[in-house]
Length: 307
Image: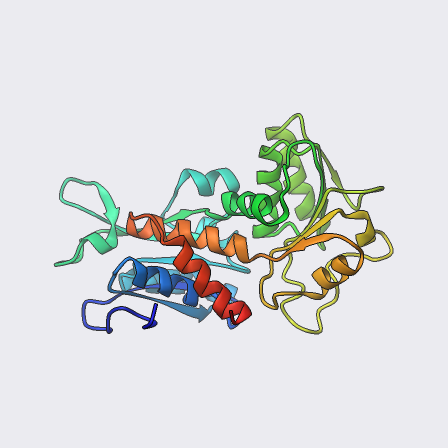
């Protein structure tokens, strides 16, 4: 698009945002504002650095200011489960919230997206949590690494919000064997126990695999900062064991993890595809319209790769 935004800000402009800590690396504003303009909406999408201890108050603030919706990134996806007013089935199923829609109750008692109340705000407003990460993960893996997940052996590094969702979604896709590694072992153990309850056919183990794996995924934040260590223990695992490697981090576009994996001969991909598809679904949840995916993809590539 020739203009970054199709409409100037005015007194009727509505707002969306992403909350995270850190947040300066985020490409979500570029992607979402392009998508919003592509839909011709009088909205703007912002980014705020929100510390975990401030998440509850900022969620309440966004509701009070009648935001359209929010995205949540590291480290808020698990915390928000207990802070939103209602949970969509997607958030209940995957156990994490990365998208929030603010809703108003109409005179018939029906909860509707808040942006539909154009002339007067409703008396009652609530926040509803969704998860758009799970489907985005598998779609990106299929497109970017050409991986058919059923029957594969997969190592997931990290068991926080993103890692938990990834592990549960991979199990639902009938991977053959999952290996879970997390700095706090009990957190990985909790995810493993849930997978064993829900997916009896999937073998899940704590710790690093012996032998080769079809896929290794970095679901930690290690790699966002230039001096971060690699997200695995090199004494217990070698990237030469991994046929393919996926890093959920997309900025830098090539993390040290991906650079090392490429040098070891693995096929590699970063998290740009996951960001695109989870963001497109969030925009659809907020707007009720199909997201202009190619416009959003072009904005992401321009923002992250400069192309």
